[in-house]
Image 1: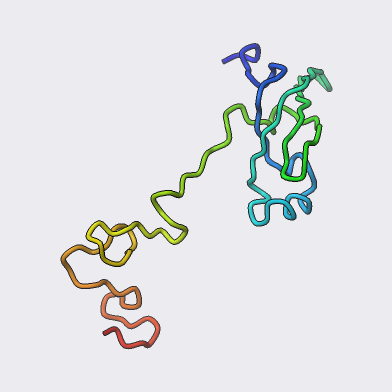
Image 2 (image 1 turned 90 degrees about the horizontal axis):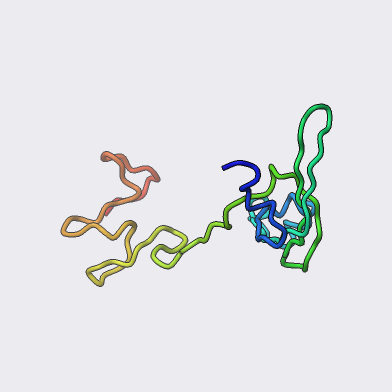
Length: 136
């Protein structure tokens, strides 16, 4: 794909960038908490610029970015703007601890459970009691 085919250079296109490239890290931490360094936000391209500086070509995008606190207009270099959509996260099958609902109707166990065998002990490894507790 050449530069003329780049969808980020179309006025009105939806683009994505990290929130820390748009506002200060402290503001991102206030808005997004522990996701401040990785949060992708959406924006709409309002204009783009091309310039040559010291023999190097630079392309920038001015966009209106949608943050949790409102909209911000900011100029970013093309390197910091993502061409594809923000990744969607689907947590419907697995909860935050990696437990999948058991198929046999018992208690939930990591990765679907241990069907037909003894219950594995997290505290026991090759016959060693890791925490000094009784492994019954």
